[in-house]
Length: 284
Image 1 (spheres, rainbow, N blue to C red):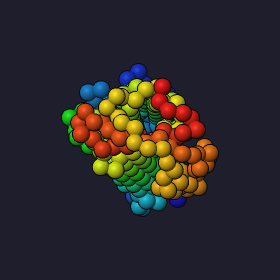
Image 2 (cartoon, rainbow, N blue to C red):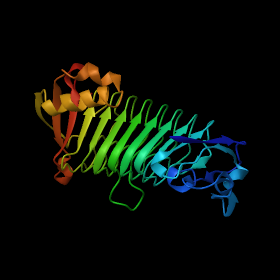
Image 3 (cartoon, rainbow, N blue to C red):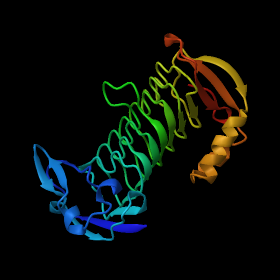
């Protein structure tokens, strides 16, 4: 892959909407053209070169482009938004909406990411080395669909409404998740290795959706009904994929675990599943 390097010049006083930091947009352009790409700052527009030193190589195709941001940019929004291929590495924190609506490629945020990371994601892989903010992989307000594909892996914690309105895809959080994880979920998979807070799966409707809790569960809603304790074959396959293909080594500890299965949310006639690893005990 050809590597384009962006070096932040400093932190501006207000956030920068930087959708231009995407393999789809920079591919095939000369370095002077990339420096002139438009970013939005408040109610004005500025060239990308006002905020970053730009150097390196540019590929002809987005799928062959690597963008390396040499430092944290918590003030930059929409990094990799709607990207279809290629790779982005942020060597630090990223701002709001990182990887939102992406459909392909890979984004690695070595630090933490702010709210709405991976919102309405359709495909690709988003890795966050630190914590994620609220509404990870969620639907934007007014939309009925959150994630419809792809995979998000968070090594730290995630905030409120992780995976809300999720339809397909996978979210993996190695730390704790805040309240309302999987709210309105209607498909896909959420894995929580840390503590799952209250209102887990609220108004979950099912259609194949499953929330897997491998750590402590604060409390389940009374509208989730215990069904069985078993060792599902499909869970062994998921956990092996997490361990072997996606590098989530902690998953290997649970391959032979039994799981307590709860169905709901009965308040909306839902048939979703919450699986709680038996070795960790049931909900508190």
